[in-house]
Image (tube, rainbow, N blue to C red; front, side, top):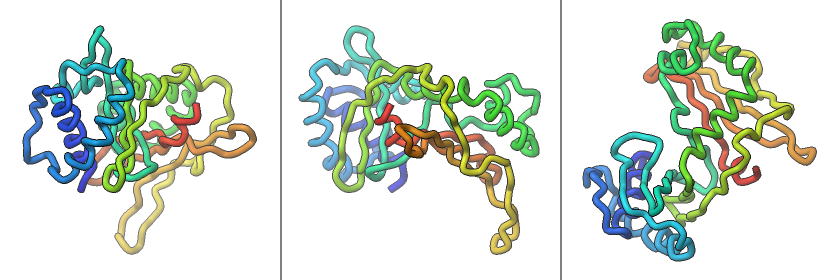
Length: 230
């Protein structure tokens, strides 16, 4: 079961509980998962009476999945397993979109990935705050983890969206290198994990991936554990 199916099924489950029209194609929903998610989501919502969902707009591909009472907004994210990575809105743009987003004169060219990574490193704290803003872009952020076994639903508290100030941030791979893979007879895609130290211990913040094969994009995702810490 892929992540898209899990996400669409979770949205449909919420719509069912609030008797909302979802505009989700039935073929994109896993009926067994729908049943499995229902009890967990219902129990969570019963314990969070402040969240009253009145409209589903996830099909519009905006930052918002649901509209709640009092003009509140809600973003729903899902993880296949207990732990995983959460992608901010706009956290996996194409190379051309990335260049436009950050006013870079790279014209979406693949051979400029090294320069894109240098741009991220040079502007790291502001870049990461932007990723936080795009993760907590709604009034409510609900995460459903361990979806394929025993779903767990939680509301992530919005942190200081200017969290990244003067912390020492470092990468597991500090230089952009596409290493040669003799088995595949081509170079590997580059990925690296961003880390920091909290209370004297190393903590993984998130992962950057530079896709250059079937997809050509810059992807960043936060580790759920980190978001739960801050």
